[in-house]
Image 1 (cartoon, rainbow, N blue to C red):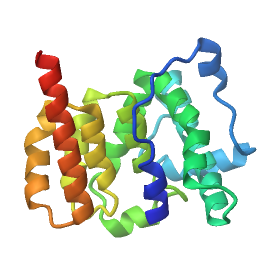
Image 2: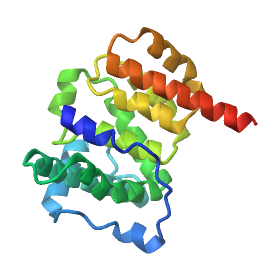
Image 3: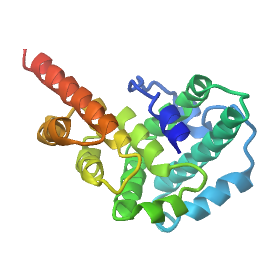
Length: 219
């Protein structure tokens, strides 16, 4: 799990999303051949939290594309484990997929916030039992910060507070990447009082980034 988080957190800077309509319809090319069965396995695993069967087709499309992304990330992590790929290469290969998800807009935002909301009450044992080979919350968060989703801020804050979550550093970083001043009080508190060094460092970095951004915007 540490390796997954390290690789995931390398998605450090929100990309400028500039994808033509044909690209959004077809999706970017995968670095590995992915079968429909692989995607369907992840769809089945995540369906308890994201029931899109009766939702509009754009949301179904975003959910399917997110599950496809997770299947590709699973292949990347297998390749990293076999020393056939470096973390940096995996990030570079899959960033276009993050951009694609972000370019799908509100349907992606709706689906990923729904996923985070549905899973936020889980304890660590439940999380480990329902990771579908990847951590869907990490990559949902990365996609939402690439989208600069203001709607994600409240759920990021709630998840960042939850010490039952092993990988909550990603939610803290997400607050800094989106840069909403609403998170400043929480981040300041975490930077001063958090006992986990990794979380404290992420909170301090996020707090300073939002402060700097707020000062620039006021000028």
